[in-house]
Length: 165
Image 1 (cartoon, rainbow, N blue to C red):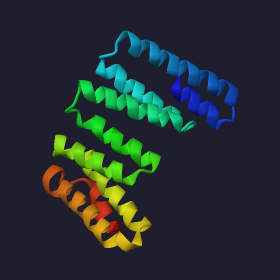
Image 2 (image 1 turned 90 degrees about the vertical axis):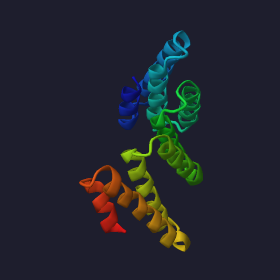
Image 3 (image 1 turned 45 degrees about the vertical axis):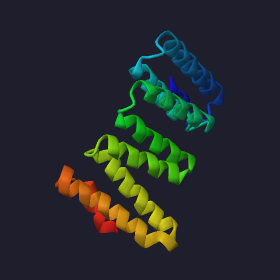
């Protein structure tokens, strides 16, 4: 339903989009109320809120709240922490995003997606903040090199990232 709400919003069908948004949230509320400790349902709820945040940024806070609640049930789940990094990046909070990417890597040291996202993030920061460009490019390079050296020597996206630095 969240996906339908987004598609309808993109097609300027706001009344129908609003209805599907309400239904998606209500369904998620019902399921998680019946199963408050089901990690899979909570992860799905976070994804629903993240999708709905494309049309209403207030849902991003609900996604973050849901992930934090889920982390209480699954404290070593690196993907939850990775998602927090993405959510905070979406909110424009670069420092929190970096903190959560690094925390995800502590939980799962061979987490390719987190290393690559962190590399992309630093590469973007290097462009946006010329005064710290050298530092950010070095950190982006370290992330890409770590992937190629320790996780996947054939990872093309990391090779491309290195070329772009």
